[in-house]
Length: 134
Image (cartoon, rainbow, N blue to C red):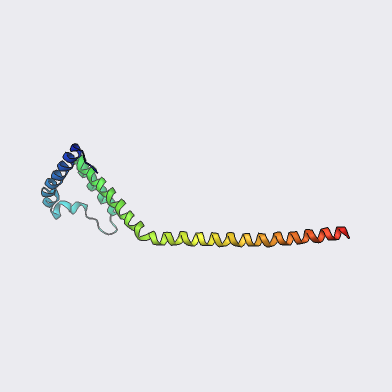
Protein backbone atom coordinates (compact mmCIF):
# COMPACT_ATOMS: atom_id res chain seq x y z
CA UNK A 1 0.00 0.00 0.00
CA UNK A 2 1.42 3.36 -0.99
CA UNK A 3 0.98 6.40 1.24
CA UNK A 4 0.56 9.88 -0.15
CA UNK A 5 2.92 12.66 0.97
CA UNK A 6 0.05 14.36 2.77
CA UNK A 7 -0.74 11.27 4.83
CA UNK A 8 2.96 10.94 5.74
CA UNK A 9 3.05 14.56 6.93
CA UNK A 10 -0.14 14.06 8.95
CA UNK A 11 1.21 10.85 10.49
CA UNK A 12 4.47 12.58 11.43
CA UNK A 13 2.62 15.53 12.95
CA UNK A 14 0.38 13.27 14.98
CA UNK A 15 3.35 11.23 16.17
CA UNK A 16 5.29 14.32 17.19
CA UNK A 17 2.22 15.83 18.80
CA UNK A 18 1.57 12.69 20.82
CA UNK A 19 5.20 12.53 21.89
CA UNK A 20 5.03 16.12 23.07
CA UNK A 21 1.75 15.49 24.84
CA UNK A 22 3.22 12.50 26.63
CA UNK A 23 6.06 14.64 28.02
CA UNK A 24 3.73 17.40 29.22
CA UNK A 25 1.27 15.28 31.17
CA UNK A 26 -1.02 17.64 33.09
CA UNK A 27 -2.08 14.87 35.46
CA UNK A 28 1.42 14.69 36.90
CA UNK A 29 0.74 18.10 38.45
CA UNK A 30 -2.44 16.90 40.18
CA UNK A 31 -2.17 16.08 43.85
CA UNK A 32 -4.40 13.95 46.02
CA UNK A 33 -5.89 17.18 47.42
CA UNK A 34 -6.91 18.23 43.90
CA UNK A 35 -8.83 15.00 43.40
CA UNK A 36 -10.19 14.69 46.95
CA UNK A 37 -13.43 16.42 45.97
CA UNK A 38 -14.14 13.59 43.52
CA UNK A 39 -13.55 10.65 45.87
CA UNK A 40 -16.74 8.89 46.91
CA UNK A 41 -17.67 7.28 50.16
CA UNK A 42 -19.49 3.97 50.17
CA UNK A 43 -23.22 4.62 50.20
CA UNK A 44 -22.85 8.40 50.05
CA UNK A 45 -22.76 9.00 46.33
CA UNK A 46 -22.78 6.82 43.24
CA UNK A 47 -19.30 6.78 41.70
CA UNK A 48 -20.60 7.93 38.32
CA UNK A 49 -21.96 11.10 39.97
CA UNK A 50 -18.43 12.00 41.09
CA UNK A 51 -17.30 11.36 37.52
CA UNK A 52 -20.05 13.64 36.23
CA UNK A 53 -18.90 16.38 38.64
CA UNK A 54 -15.30 15.94 37.47
CA UNK A 55 -16.41 16.10 33.84
CA UNK A 56 -18.55 19.21 34.46
CA UNK A 57 -15.63 20.95 36.18
CA UNK A 58 -13.29 19.94 33.36
CA UNK A 59 -15.80 21.19 30.73
CA UNK A 60 -15.99 24.52 32.54
CA UNK A 61 -12.20 24.77 32.37
CA UNK A 62 -11.40 23.17 28.98
CA UNK A 63 -14.16 21.78 26.79
CA UNK A 64 -11.66 20.08 24.44
CA UNK A 65 -9.98 18.18 27.26
CA UNK A 66 -13.43 17.13 28.52
CA UNK A 67 -14.38 15.92 25.04
CA UNK A 68 -11.12 13.96 24.82
CA UNK A 69 -11.85 12.36 28.18
CA UNK A 70 -15.33 11.33 27.03
CA UNK A 71 -13.93 9.94 23.76
CA UNK A 72 -11.29 7.97 25.67
CA UNK A 73 -13.97 6.54 27.97
CA UNK A 74 -16.07 5.51 24.97
CA UNK A 75 -13.12 3.84 23.27
CA UNK A 76 -12.15 2.04 26.48
CA UNK A 77 -15.75 0.83 26.93
CA UNK A 78 -15.90 -0.50 23.36
CA UNK A 79 -12.52 -2.21 23.71
CA UNK A 80 -13.61 -3.84 26.97
CA UNK A 81 -16.85 -5.04 25.42
CA UNK A 82 -14.99 -6.40 22.39
CA UNK A 83 -12.66 -8.37 24.70
CA UNK A 84 -15.66 -9.63 26.65
CA UNK A 85 -17.38 -10.76 23.46
CA UNK A 86 -14.15 -12.42 22.38
CA UNK A 87 -14.12 -14.34 25.65
CA UNK A 88 -17.78 -15.26 25.29
CA UNK A 89 -17.47 -16.11 21.61
CA UNK A 90 -16.91 -19.83 22.24
CA UNK A 91 -20.08 -20.02 24.36
CA UNK A 92 -22.09 -18.17 21.71
CA UNK A 93 -20.85 -20.42 18.92
CA UNK A 94 -21.56 -23.52 21.03
CA UNK A 95 -25.09 -22.31 21.80
CA UNK A 96 -25.82 -21.67 18.12
CA UNK A 97 -24.41 -25.10 17.28
CA UNK A 98 -26.66 -26.79 19.83
CA UNK A 99 -29.68 -24.90 18.52
CA UNK A 100 -28.91 -25.94 14.92
CA UNK A 101 -28.47 -29.58 15.96
CA UNK A 102 -31.82 -29.51 17.79
CA UNK A 103 -33.60 -27.90 14.83
CA UNK A 104 -32.06 -30.45 12.45
CA UNK A 105 -33.02 -33.41 14.66
CA UNK A 106 -36.55 -32.07 15.02
CA UNK A 107 -36.84 -31.56 11.24
CA UNK A 108 -35.61 -35.10 10.53
CA UNK A 109 -38.03 -36.45 13.15
CA UNK A 110 -40.95 -34.61 11.48
CA UNK A 111 -39.87 -35.81 8.02
CA UNK A 112 -39.70 -39.46 9.18
CA UNK A 113 -43.07 -39.15 10.90
CA UNK A 114 -44.61 -37.64 7.76
CA UNK A 115 -43.20 -40.50 5.65
CA UNK A 116 -44.73 -43.03 8.06
CA UNK A 117 -48.07 -41.21 8.02
CA UNK A 118 -48.02 -41.04 4.20
CA UNK A 119 -47.35 -44.80 4.13
CA UNK A 120 -50.28 -45.46 6.48
CA UNK A 121 -52.49 -43.16 4.39
CA UNK A 122 -51.57 -45.03 1.18
CA UNK A 123 -52.27 -48.34 2.94
CA UNK A 124 -55.69 -47.12 4.12
CA UNK A 125 -56.52 -45.84 0.62
CA UNK A 126 -55.56 -49.22 -0.83
CA UNK A 127 -57.77 -51.03 1.73
CA UNK A 128 -60.64 -48.66 0.96
CA UNK A 129 -60.25 -49.25 -2.78
CA UNK A 130 -60.26 -53.05 -2.23
CA UNK A 131 -63.32 -52.77 0.00
CA UNK A 132 -65.18 -50.74 -2.64
CA UNK A 133 -64.35 -53.34 -5.34
CA UNK A 134 -65.65 -56.23 -3.36
